[in-house]
Length: 215
Ligand code: AMP
Image: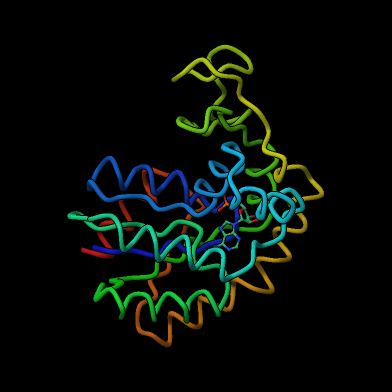
């Protein structure tokens, strides 16, 4: 099963992807994680992407399409993959369709995680992420705090607020989402692939709804 996860920033795409990886052995492909890894490494890709990301803007489409084509053509996914945070624009969705046909791969569903806007702002501004790029565990100061303040439970690295999760950057990301990414819901409805899921509830319940909807 190959899935696209749609939804605003903070809708829970990353957390739900990790649950699907655990439960179904799928592979999570997160363009955000790949870009953050590239920035940490100081690679060319990271240098090109960093400014856009810190401001909460989207990285240019062609850069993202190249990352995805390389990943999908080099690796095998016996239990399928989850595209988390990609596509984010109509040109990316059209580019993905061409890549899929070149590689003879099929997308089975585009799952839209629907969350109220107030809840999204609250979730994003209270989120904390492990600074170790190999771990990237996600916490929340209200609903999932670390056992020791500021220290990751899993690997002991410092837990930080991402630079694109400040109030200013969150506003930009939500506006970018409405303008560029929300139109993908209609795009995938027309492709006959859209499945909408209420994601205001806890991530375990959201994951169960996804599995029962797609199976
Ligand atoms: P995420 O972790 O998915 O919220 O992504 C964090 C940031 O990475 C976004 O705000 C963008 O700057 C960049 N990014 C991630 N995925 C994409 C994408 N598919 N297209 C453009 N920019 C992206």
